[in-house]
Image: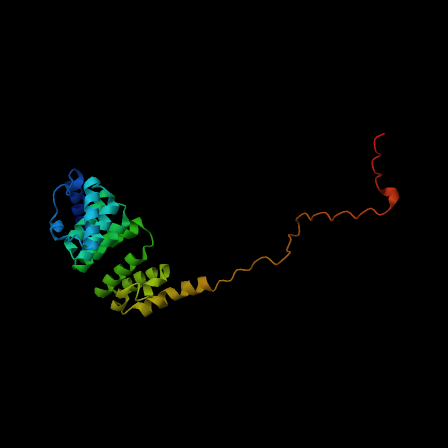
Amino acid sequence: MKRSLILAAAALTLAGCASLLHRNENPYQKTLFIERYLDPSNPLDMQIREKIDALRANPRSATLHNELGQLLRQKGFPKDAETEFERAINADRRFYPAWYNLGLMRQARGDYPGARVAYHQTIRYRHGHAPALFQLGLMEEQRHHDEAAIEYYAKAFSINHQLLDVHVNPRILDSHLVALALLRMYPKEHARETTAFEPAPPGYMQPNAARPAPPAAPVTNPAGQTPPAKPPV
């Protein structure tokens, strides 16, 4: 536990240092290395070009950094993509999508302590972020911490049932604890889904509530009717 806290503090310190280094400079003022490989006839490359040009005008946009990071990862430049996610966080530390994407990049290259920090930051700024909870469970399962993994999985599945769909979450196939996680979440889900609340019956009125006065009966006796007004002379 102590070692994990030290690693987390170190990762956050490095992120803070990166923020200081990039705070007063625009790394897009010069031609980037990636720009040498952009093909004008390739739609993906043109999207990358547009994001880079936009960041030259607005280098502090967390959204643009995050979008460029996703495009660079799709292009096959994971290191540059990870840098963009870090810059997105430097621009807005509460921008949880960049934290989650950074966690994915770190996890893919085997930096599990760094990925764990990124996923916890995702949950910190976006409570109940189901994909981050699932990834934390997956890493705990790989470390053979089955109880912690089951707890993370149960929380993730209870928040977002679509994570059980292999088409939505292909990494579900990497887990051997899904059945146990479903058993863990079943009592709460069953109690919630089977709770049938009773509505008020039709026409119900509280005993002490004032009842509306019934309409007056029509006057049928001519003597009790009001005579019509006389026409003017």
